[in-house]
Length: 192
Image 1 (cartoon, rainbow, N blue to C red):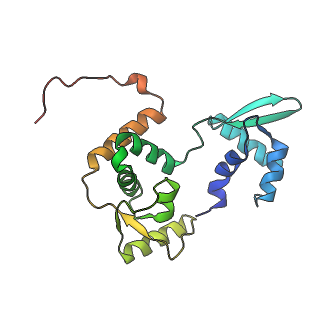
Image 2: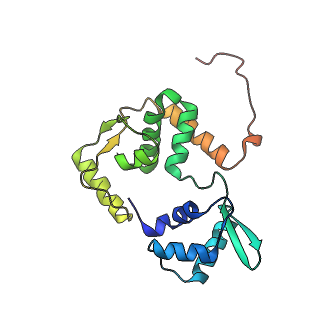
Image 3: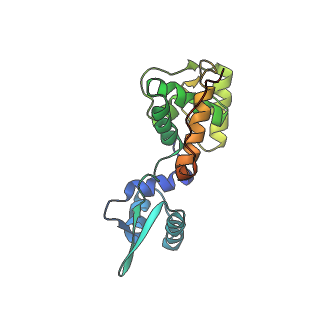
């Protein structure tokens, strides 16, 4: 599932090292990987990623050097899986599938689960053929190629709804770095 326009950011981040990379290095490497763009466009793109706090820009005369900001290089699949593991380690695969299914409102392909780190046995049930065909058609429109032999899955049931809501709350608080605003409370009486 490779889409050049959408994976440019991930490609750039994967090329960056601890000591950073210059614009000329990135331009040459991107050209080798099939991203043929003018250096001024690349410079603007890197500046935008820097403004979004995805990359760090450092002056090393006569060049500018870019490094990745730690933790910002994770996509939605990896972030959901990490939060699912922290909420429910024993059922993290099921919660990851459930969260992706609820967020994307379609069956989740095997490749997407693998991207999230869910390997091995399916955490759900295989979707019906017409659901898979519809999801594949949608993914193609969105610019992703899904092999026709790829399986797609849906959750077994809705019993993970509470965990899913907790996952969303945890993601919003963590990703927005606003944990300091959350009041920690102790439950004083049992809710029935």
